[in-house]
Length: 91
Image (cartoon, rainbow, N blue to C red; front, side, top):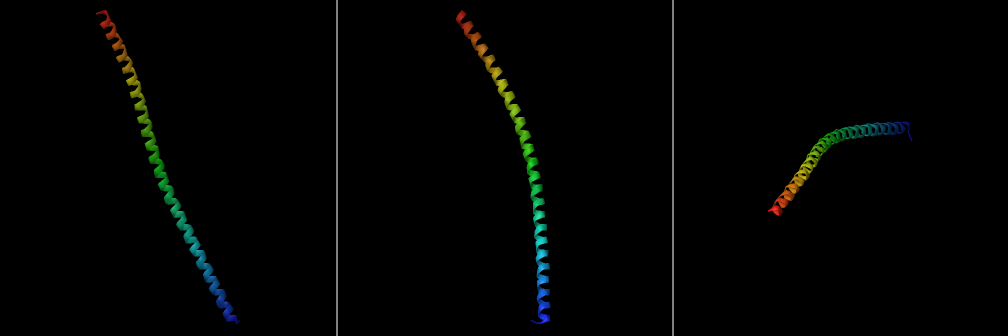
């Protein structure tokens, strides 16, 4: 092989290596941007999930209060029914 051919091969290999390194850096940068974008989306979803969890807890508390109120009303109605039965028996 001639010296010129060896130099050309070395230069071509060096250029290919440089291009491969640039492509790898570009892919790495793109992956990092995608990771950041997904992280931001995940953060938004987490915030939204927190809001929904908070609303669900508020609704749960309201439902529990309504159930307690309904139970009190049921007991009152039962007592009134018993009083009505007692009054009917006395008549």
